[in-house]
Image (tube, rainbow, N blue to C red; front, top):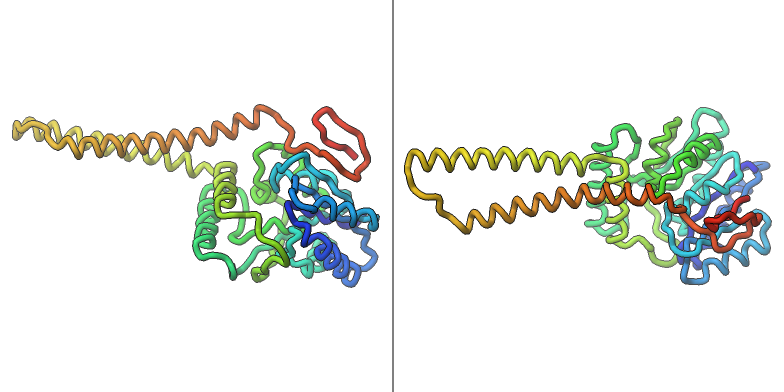
Length: 322
């Protein structure tokens, strides 16, 4: 098998056939003698996504699918797809066609030259996105770049990429529960070529990534691959200690020199509340890191397969093995 295309799906029934057709046309026209497969991962969809995939698979021998027992998230779907992909080269794409299939031939040719192990993509603009969403996205990448200096994550980076088998195997070695694939792809290293393209709107349906979901995803990424939040809490602690010491010296000197009592109960209460808020903020940041550690030590499976057209060999955790 030359190429595997992994497509995580969550309520994408309107896009699956169009995605398969467009990718197939581009591959057959531009990549000669290429054997390829599609690995659709249904992430607990509530619509007819699974039904559409099964109908497609019944008529196409190169379509394989995995359906989770519930919604485990895109990161789990990506991991499952990478695990069961057979291709020498493996591409990760969204089925909404915001990841343009027209780039696939260039990706394939680049990897075939043997210089790079990964061809990744990034958007050079954010046309069509709300301004506040774009601003927070840029802020996220800036924070991540400062906190994770050993990981290459470019502004506007997409999950859309094509990798060699040895890079895929390296990513699969990291079976952590709290996953952030953009960080994992950068952490394993290997030589990467970046392709740029303009933002493309969805072919059909609405994005499942609401602002709240993106915020949680961004916080997970920062916590998983950056110590910036912990550093900020430490800096706050140092700053407040210094300010408290200076205020203590001022009050003592004032009492000795002027003998007037300490007044200003309102300001005192405000200061106490402010310091208490800073302490709770720092405790909350540390709590997030502890929660991540707690989830890791439980060693729960990243996903559970409910249905698949893969060969059936059941394990106790419900996962299906080829």
